[in-house]
Structures are given as structure tokens and as C-alpha cells.
Image (cartoon, rainbow, N blue to C red; front, side, top):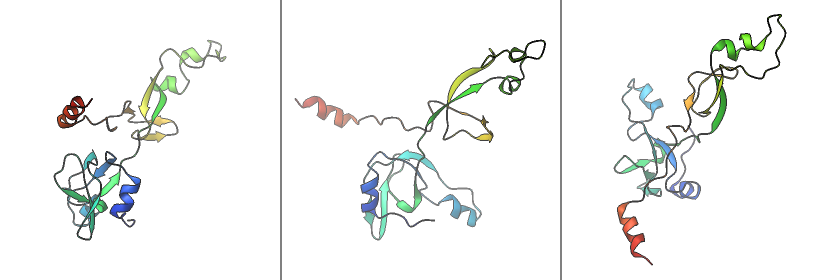
Amino acid sequence: MTQPLTAEQWNSRHPVGTPVIAYPGIRPEYAAEIRTTDYPRLETVTRSRAWNLGPEPVVMVDGYAGGISLEHVDLRPTCTPMDLFVGPEICLDRECDQYMTDGGEDTGIDQCSHLRQEQACETHSVEVDAGRFDPAAPWPCPHTVRDRPQSSAIVRATALEG
């Protein structure tokens, strides 16, 4: 594992609200060493700047009370959309009757009527063969962090200004 960042390095690279995966108790690679599968994993966002708690740099995340060591925090991958065709395998392999005439000649169509184009999350889809995904994660991706709502205190403070 790489050397964790200092609190100052983390803060200069990652603002509050950064999407992360946090392991409050134990990292999965350490859990395997002690033969346990009982470790919490939070897909969340940071809710504070990092600071030093003694010699340990820590940060707070949504869904957990207290600081978590930066050694137990990973950046979440950025979700990106991709276009793909969905339909019967025979159509994806261009073996559908619509691609060939009865005489075996190419009809010249780009795609048969059994296929439809959809968007999926490239980051969280599993490619099982060149250009084949199973499963294909939906888009918009459920792993994408949505904008965090403002707290009611901030909304009231904003409403009183002006």
C-alpha cells in the first residue's frame, strides 16, 4: 500500500464533499489476513477537511461519527457513461436474419430492429468479452454521489441575507 497523505496534502488535493470509500474499522486486505469478512465499507463523501489526531491524519465522512484515518479512506472512481447496444445475442453477433438476404448477401443495415441503444456506467460495468458487458451498470449510475442538500441552518441563513 502507498504511504498515506498528510492532512495538508489531502486538503490541498481533495475538497470537502469528495466521493470516497471509507473503512472505519479495518481495510479489506487486513481483514483477509485475520480471516474475517466483517468490515464496514461506506460509499460516501467527506464532510470535513482532514486534520491530525495525534500523529494520525483523519477526515470525517457522511454516515459515520468521528474521524477515519486517511489510511482507511480511498477515492471513489469517477463514473462515466458509455453507449452500448442491448438485445438478443444473435443480433449482437450480426447473425440475425435482418442482416442477410435469403440469398446470403449483406443487406447493408447497421443494426437490426431487435437492438436498442442504452447508456450504462463504464466504471461499474463488467466487461466479460471484447465489447460485452455482464452486468452493465445502469446510467445514471447508482454509485454516483448526488449533490448534497444544504442543511436547514444554511438555508435559513441564506434566506435572511439580503
